[in-house]
Image 1 (tube, helix red, strand yellow):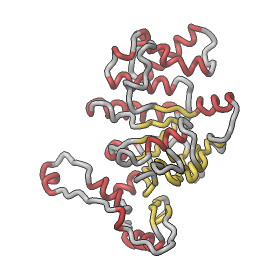
Image 2 (tube, rainbow, N blue to C red):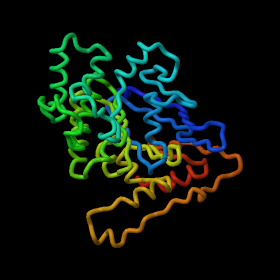
Image 3 (cartoon, rainbow, N blue to C red):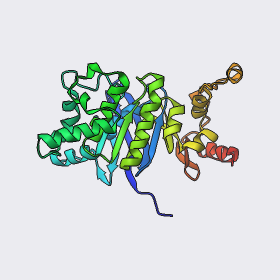
Length: 313
């Protein structure tokens, strides 16, 4: 079996705000993971856990406090010329959470989508530029007549499709989707996720999909990472994480997922997570450890042995 190609490597990434001050916030603290070409890695966790900050730091909307982000072996946060940064940004794009705030209300849709095309010089003339915009609109399920309208004339789901078209305009390989469905009606969420899945197959895209809806993350992701207070606490394939959640925090999150079964819901008991429940020996190193092949948990050596003993084949 051919070895999978690493597209992105995140190594001990740190993003601290107000560093060194009394109100210092360790939004991302020593996070490490890889993303392979063609896959979707989902990151989940409650609000404030650092998942969105991780995505924004990867794409360099924030300068990292520490650690490295390597895209195809290139250090994203190393000092680079503007042309080098432009080339990286062409290959790495982002879909934002709020389809209302992420689109300039004073720009027509054709200008919003063509902004990247103009910056990177991807159209030889106005006709080619217009044709590209119209093709992108049709790709995301809109029609070419929408090009001359303003963002306020669209629904939330349509605006998010415009945001997706804008991200696709520069032909990226890697897209960070930062909670792209959380601001949408439930009836529209599945449509947007299915669009992202279809685009991935058609264009061989790689996704980092950030969300707090575990059911939707399981549906779209190949692997899932769970974050808690700035740290990655568990990482496994989507199927394995749901079948064998090991870290108590992951178990707590999964126990909160509602099911369309009234009998089950009446009896369902949510597991609470107490971060002080871990028993560590003095000076013992706590880090991400591989419990079984491909399944990592942040734990001590003692806990690692317990997780291995309790793993369900």
